[in-house]
Image 1 (cartoon, one colour):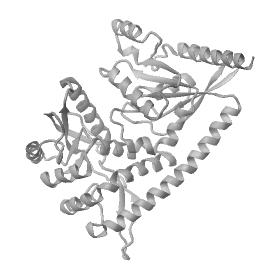
Image 2: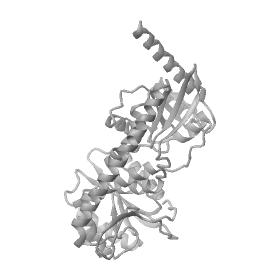
Image 3: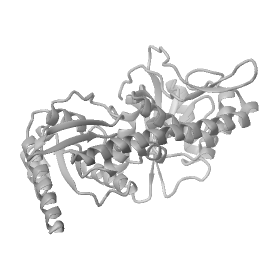
Image 4: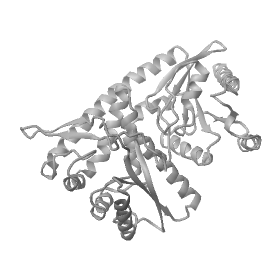
Length: 403
């Protein structure tokens, strides 16, 4: 079991009433609780998914819960050919979870799959008195903790509201039964339609504000292009070491933490001139399997750094047991962003945590990749050399077109 940090889970935009019955949305304030919320994590192993894949996915969910400030006290996996229409897991298994939650004094049940609003409500009926959170909900909660820039906070709030909107009806019914506490502030069922209108207006306002920020980013990128600056974007699975790598390459001091989604805000740093060409590196939000579509949509302005880059450095944690699955997950997101055809360099980081046979295998499977350790400054010159080769090949191609 992993211990949490003691911070409260479930940070959502809150509705706060006034005497006139008008409701406004505000951010939850951090609750000063001394103990981590106890959580049960639940996975459903579907179809041809192997036991190992299911276990690794639940391991990752445990890490997400821990990052959010929870303490996992039990884990449950159910094998099913397909999800149950009403409850995703079987109703009998849901009753079993209720009994386990009661015996362990757990406060929340976190599912490794995305639940529909109706499935979440039905589970809350079977497991009354406990918060039911799906994978998207826990990821959004982490993003709410880690967003620091004004743009990042707007993006997270937009994603949260789009996630909450279809869940309002069942949510307020469930909150009335819970009777208050962390993540349970709300006006009640009678204000449902008012809440929906307010939420929709807030979504429209956030979308408009983010469009303005997107325009500003676009102006900055065009300015860089006008001055002939070569743009390199770092992409990769969360906690692959992108921030450590950008610090090692540029001498910058981007925040580095050994936890999921430590970096949300896009950071651009200047690399040394390469053959007279100014090069900048952009650190972007980390990807993850089953990345919520609300986040991809909300973070599009930030992810435009990836779209506009001349070259992508796909950073991979070479020491991770699910390395290949993580590579595939990142490639899936790049396809969603329609940038999978953009030039890439595969960079295997943390090779100091691997052995010689692992490194030989990597070079055999991925002959064009680079093996580095950002922590120990190993292989960094190889990255610079490949960027230089790419710039020169682009320059030569441009000259041929001009001739």
